Length: 226
Image (cartoon, rainbow, N blue to C red; front, side, top):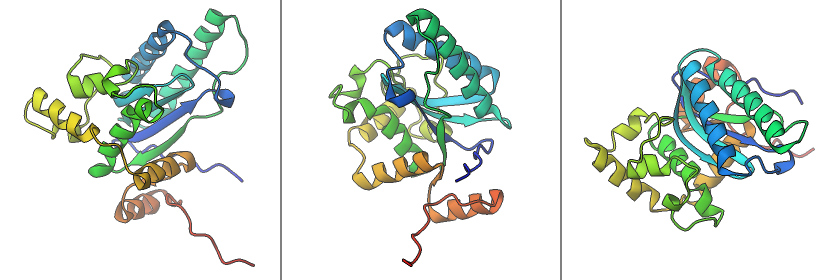
């Protein structure tokens, strides 16, 4: 089956995941993570992509990002991926591929869906039982968004800014949002959307995207059995 073309409309947030090949480890040290983060900062700025949230797990990466020009997201991910593989192979004396093919992504409607993605990404280490408190995991944007720890990589989305009139109030509101895990329906919807390259949003949003790009962006209903 042919792959569906990527949907990267400018100004629309995207949830991105990139996994290690066969789910192998991609980060063996804090230096590895810092190197990846620095490359992401460099190429996001170079390609005009705002990074709103992230988490770097040992064998995969989640990002929430908005591209501001045509093709920016693909160029950023290609540049970051290639630069990091060169570094990782040289650093750890290995050869060959590191990533599991092309990255996966889905477009995200704002309103409640965007904040669900924020929470999905930053609560990943809690769901994986690595930490009980997301603040205890240093390789995510949680400390920036919830505690105000400075991070050059972080560009708050307008919807996040609307959480409160001051930085402290926004952080408190965000901590309250993250105090509850997502329910199973939310988790299923997010995972289905990103694994299949669909849209995460309500029916009206999906209708608009399908009309704009002339391709399905929702899970198709199974046809009748023969």
